[in-house]
Length: 417
Image 1: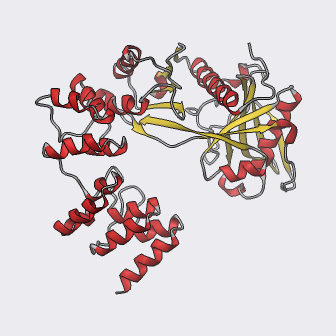
Image 2 (image 1 turned 60 degrees about the vertical axis):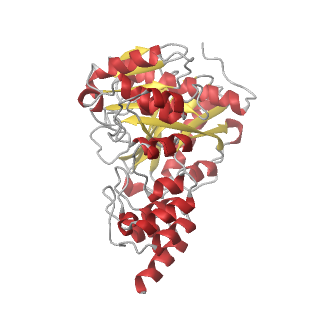
Image 3 (image 1 turned 45 degrees about the vertical axis):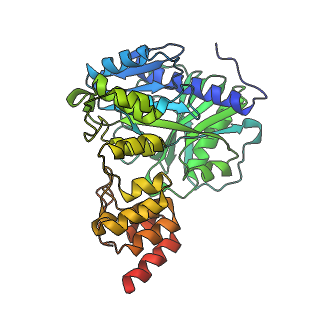
């Protein structure tokens, strides 16, 4: 039963967002003949055709039996695209550690937003020739430049057989050509907005705002009081212009390759990672003979995990047992004097490459917009031409792209010396 939410608090809106997201992923799995495991503490899906699935807002008790059974299911089925969504803080204590130990990597942060539908802002310009219509039938997968149009996206196929009282897609055309889409899902007492996408050639014209507003107006006509969505933080200002307000940030984790089939974590590796992530020194001492230098299933080094989880005692234990500590590791643990000492002792340390991005200490300073770290890195005479492995950019490229103007000026000054 979908009881419409009224006079909602922020926590009630978050609970509604959770249920709306569950409804979306369950709908998608059902349409695609996938597996749906719906339980109060652990809900998840699996879609064989996509070799992927989604774990939805787990609220596990202290027992991890259900989590282990889920991971065994994914291990024994082709699984190259698994995501986990959570509110922040998670309903499961130390969920981050539990997932990282089992092969997940940290992901992006959703930005939960909500709009009181009595206050829709229609003060925006849109182009002549724009038409927006409710449309659950027109195939969109052939429009390669339209975001969220491919068949492996949520809510993109099978909608022609669904009730518009449950899910309604909107399609925008400009002078007869499809240029945008969005999806409206009714569930959890709210109207959830998803898949807002505009083709690149039509961006900046107000089309995205227009199609979101069309969805919001439809929701209001159906008696709903709130529309909700998740945005990235770069998109948040656009939705704020329409009247959406930030509720809270969320958390995600991802598995993006076949690691569960090719290098699944064993029980000892999981126990080791959990001990590091929780800072459980007694458990670490009991794990005699464990390989402290091998990367985890998700590619993280054990010291990197200790840094990520902010467990300085575990980091010290690892260092005492022969694990190398880089300057960035030390800096991120708040050991600034130790970071400087590491750079002073080893001239090559400043150009050490970190993580899948293979970025340097100075790249990290740019990303963090950390002036003090940038000053430390520059004092160690770095190679300014090293480019990362993902974006193929040197630290100055990163500074210019991220508008880290002060650090960019520092790099330019150093380069001119």
